[in-house]
Image (tube, rainbow, N blue to C red):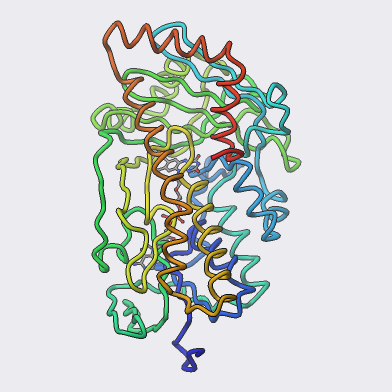
Length: 410
Ligand SMILES: Cc1cc2nc3c(=O)[nH]c(=O)nc-3n(C[C@H](O)[C@H](O)[C@H](O)COP(=O)(O)OP(=O)(O)OC[C@H]3O[C@@H](n4cnc5c(N)ncnc54)[C@H](O)[C@@H]3O)c2cc1C
């Protein structure tokens, strides 16, 4: 039976990040009464670079083909595409400590692009615009969940704004430090990567030519992701960096003057796009691997970073989260059409089965990459370089790795 009171819902999604907004949007045509809550005003103020007329958000994501497909089916991709975005066609990955190198190219793989770099805030804006336009989901922003109580038929959420919201099912999309996961006492396996990631927008002397770079150093990987050469901006000088390093080294990089940081970045990226001539504000993110042992418990289910957070070295976090959102909404709709209640364990088990193996597989792959590139023994270094050069020559292995990262195979 449908809840009748104003603050009663079938489903409450906690967290209006990219994943929460997507799952709420995907449930719009389900006949369920859905609410979406976020502790912040959404969309938030873009973390814009005020010194830069381009005003890029420092947080960007490399969206793969499966994420693009989800947004296309939702009818949101055209909104994202109207904003700044950059399709990239090549990706060069190489080892700082030798000669190993792999070049992935969209032409070789016969695909239109390897992926698309988008600013997170623009994706959130587009999803929110679409949700408001449809008008089926009730929004509570800002609204910060501070505790929850579980009953036989309901779950109640108490908020800092003194609201009490009730639902049959709570979808926790409240990010890596999920409070909902904590309140519901989910068991989590987690460990420190012993890396902090620095993100910033930079300008380089030479155009990026729609190429993403990743250089593995013993201190950690550095990635340059090309920004905005589409949507009429016509500029190929800006890239977004994700530079992961041991915490003390990362902190020392943050403390450098802009000029010294640019010089260090030019050196560490081997001046691949020439000299780094400008750097926007730098942000530091401590990195921690987490994976919830179960994705659901009574009336609570986890999606996105609330369920799993991984090293950003292959840019897969949000891509996995969007697949969670798609799988959960699909299983809910399938369950409803079979007459099940929205939090039925059958629905939740099917969702977990659909996603857990894929998420764990990607997490293990990222952990393996990190360890292999950190190892400093001669034998591992030789194998690493030999392996990279061999993969570069082995079209089938290279194709397998690229298709996995692009979300075309799982
Ligand atoms: C440096 C870095 C680079 C990355 N690069 C990539 C990349 O290139 N590609 C990729 O796929 N992934 C990347 N990722 C991972 C990606 O950013 C995350 O996987 C993604 O943002 C997770 O989205 P989410 O919606 O699950 O969580 P979040 O984006 O964290 O959203 C959580 C939301 O919940 C809200 N919230 C939290 N607590 C409460 C509460 N108590 N009450 C109400 N609301 C609450 C927050 O305000 C927020 O809006 C990167 C991560 C990092 C750190």
